[in-house]
Length: 106
Image (cartoon, rainbow, N blue to C red; front, side, top):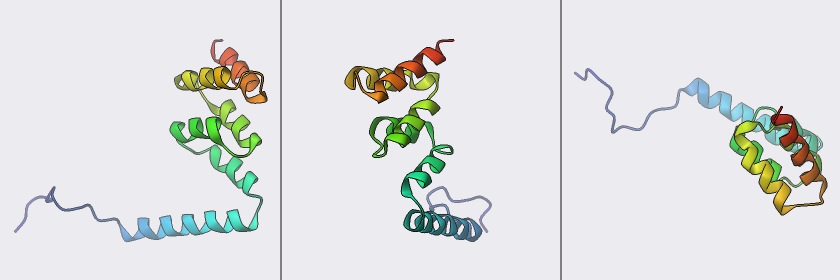
C-alpha cells in the first residue's frame, strides 16, 4: 500500500487535458493554414507570456506583429524597449518603442 505519490515517477497528464491541448493545437494549425497568418499571430499576441511578447517585439516577421508586441510591453520590459531604440534607431520600431517608454514613465 502506497500512502503518497512517488516523486521519482513522472507526472501523468490527465486525459482530458491532453485532448484539450490536441484540439487547441489542431485549431491553431487550421487557422494558420486557412486564414491570414499575420492576423492569427496578432490574435495570439494578446494571450502570450511576457517572454514571448518581448521576443515578438524584437524579432517578429510581420511589422504589425512587432508593433503590437511593443505596444503590449510593460515596465518589466523596459530593457527590451531600450534595446529596440538603441539597435534600430531611426526605424518605425524604435519610434514605437520610444513612445511606449514615454507612456510607461507616466
